[in-house]
Length: 400
Ligand SMILES: *Cc1c(COP(=O)(O)O)cnc(C)c1O
Image (cartoon, rainbow, N blue to C red):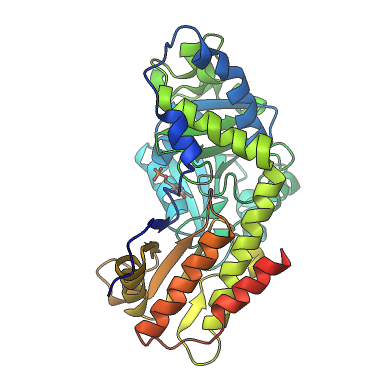
């Protein structure tokens, strides 16, 4: 008998669960885009977008998903013939680099595998070897949503500084923004990209590109960009429409206003990060308990310091990860994330990975509920597992 009736939970790493407050804020008649509340909202919205990335510098907004934000960053940063140094720790790092390559940028890729973070020493060596200074940008993924690796942005900045290399540091924060600590200014980031539908709790449709003053200046001669994607006017908009290159994404802006009010002004960004940290540790504790002993269950990232607070990737030997996902959805109303990029989709091993999304509008009861459902599924399906996963997670929540 299925027990899935009731409110469904989407525990995939984006789109994430949206607060009813955000959805309700969007439920309104079409607003005036020439004057009034929406136009007046803009300065505060920009200030809060700066706050969420911890920067006093520039931000450009696009009607786009994360791929659009990637492309916005790429076409503004690169000139024809430039080179990118791409640091890959999962499927998304690969995707951003591939897009740059498709745009005609030469890409030097360092692949750190699917279960380990960037090693800054190797980055430093690659920068030192670039004696002609052809590397225009270092592309780094803060949290790779496929592997659930968390990368050390400040360590990559330190590698650039140690070499004295002028390359821009560009960071994909699509999964991490509003989940894992990110400090645009303090860490010396030049470009950061994100999107609305993950930690920022708004439907997919808004892409954000934060740009340092240095990058804005340096990229003035970039010749890959087209008028719509040019970040100059958007970042320095003096009229409302200039923020969007045309009609504003009216309802998304109301949703974003509500979400940023919740993150920046009510809960507070530091607390939002702390909540994600505790809930992530609860998820890890459950997997560690299930993986105890002879079971075929393991977290994808062994080192806790390299684990994301937004998403957790795990191995449950094929085909059990897929069986468990299906059971959770059809029997208990919880949708877990597929394993992405860990094995080709037509490879039987593809069914040996899954991901749990814990980004954005998630609290203790949602995460504990998801883990309890997973534990029930492990039992129902006869998948060998260590005992006490939910109890271990509860101990983390109890300890704050
Ligand atoms: C989700 C995600 C993307 C892609 O974003 P879309 O909105 O699906 O285009 C890119 N990078 C990371 C790290 C992501 O998590």
